[in-house]
Amino acid sequence: MIFELPLLLLLVMTAAGAILVKDLVSAVFILGSYSFALALVWALVGAVDVAFVEAVVGAGLATVFFLLTLFRTDGKDTRIRRLPVPIVALIGLPLLALLMLYGAGDLPVFEDPTAPASTHISPEYLEKSVDLTRTPNVVTTLLMDNRAMATLVEAIDIFTAGIACALLLRSRNQ
Image (tube, rainbow, N blue to C red):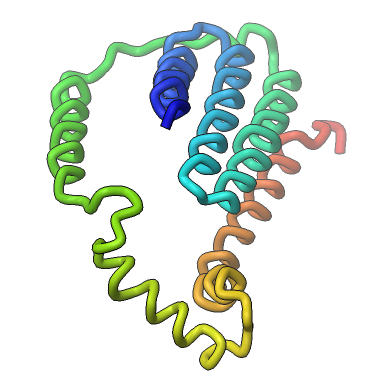
């Protein structure tokens, strides 16, 4: 597609910018734009539900919570002090990236109708969805019945993060 390469470049540039910037407030804004670009990528590949969560939580809530936290800290604490990068990270992370790229070569092509997920898993979900769950909407079946535990854990994660932010941001006089 026409948007894939510009979005990939935008993701790489915002990730690098968030790492290289020397001010935490700037880093938060750059990470917010990274999350928004990532939400666009998720929408582009058809995962609209994931795109929505990424936009709301990543670009919205996380940015607001980070900014609220930074505005409650002392100005001298918002400057980033960089430590030297360990040699293990300089060698290990590129090797890990190469290993992951090597492994990605064995993955099926995106939207391949002969991929195992399309030939084994998807037909079973489509055929047995109504019988097993009494829900005529297959998407609802997948998200609410088959992924209910994962959705519950994600909701608990978001709730826990909200409580942690509330505790961090409460007034010191209380």
